[in-house]
Length: 303
Image (cartoon, rainbow, N blue to C red; front, side, top):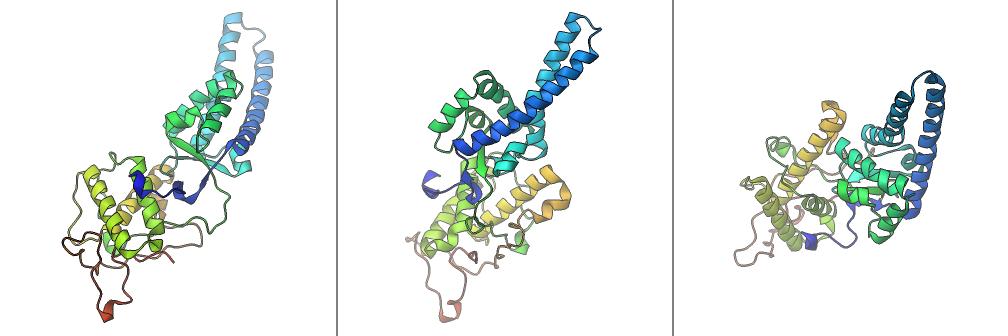
């Protein structure tokens, strides 16, 4: 799917964070965490003065695992990728496909951070971030995550257009566990930028993406559903599932809505004919009445 992702493709239109901003965020986090650890250590030292050496050592190890290691993992999990330092620097940890991270992602990043940040004083993380094209450290590579910048101009990102109402909820039983992240990214990039594509090229790309997605899910493309509408409906279903996991069912209905104050145009019912046989990239000529119809993908381009 690499050829379907443009050279400037980044997750959800956000820019990957580079070493300087990430280093500043880590410094802020470490200052806060170690200050809390020192305060807790002093309190434990005073409170456990009457205990034996083994008990004091056990409490010291437990406090180290709980505060410098456990607290950052808990904060990233509960805040969906935002620690205090990342919040101050406008950064956030997301999955490779742009979705919110879960506990297992934060756990892997935190476990690797002990070696990268604490034991090596950040040398391993700095080298890995400089070598990586997207500024990822080793923990990001193992966890399948990416640190992105959230504070970007509002016109840089575009929401994924929602599917038409007659397709919402139609794929609720679809198994999406076998769909790789690079295919999700390619679909997102197509849906947000299809208005910039030639009609014939857009139809060809949507058909290829729909075929790949259907092959991964094991369910063929429903007859009569335009490929672009099918892609939007499946992405909408995945966003709804992620929203239910992260925030509960109350916000699942808003999964397909873009940023606050920005709403993507809805799809229209299918009004297109398949390409001419023998010319897979060709788009049939419209009649005079169809001049104002949507592109051949059946998908109304974002405004």
